[in-house]
Length: 89
Length: 139
Image (cartoon, rainbow over all chains, first blue to last red; front, side):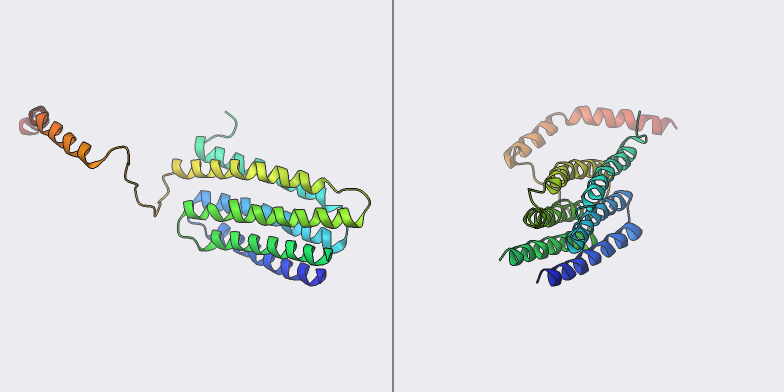
């Protein structure tokens, strides 16, 4: 039961990643692309969590935490660049 | 029993993540697209993280708290990044499909009085228009 659920969830999240990549490549404006990157890292955390449950290994939490941290900082930096034309003034 | 609960949480999380990305792909304008990932996807990942916490807490001895940390961090940072993205989009003047709302603080009677007031100040406007048009005449 759990294995089946995890397989289905892997499929759903993989399609979600594909849709984010489409918006990232296609997005008509720059904030669209930044939003796609933001969604992409959240989806990467979801994939890492699923892989952790599937393999029964608690090793992936640190990677997920790092991705969450770095992704947030990247989003903030890109938005700051769009807003001010500079990141650190 | 626990397995069914975990499966439910995992499937719910995956479906919410999928719906959020579908909103990112399908909605019409940026301000609508902002809603999908910032709410649905964050909730979906939160559900997956709860499933992971329950799974590792039931398997190993002791409570697994890494996931709670990640959930807390994601739930704190998602509104901040959404706010910054909306500010950037407004700064870039992105096109919005939304209608301009009617201001409820200014009812119709006020508008009429404003028009009357504009009528009283009409001569000044005429003066300014003649002032504006005179350079054109001289040119």
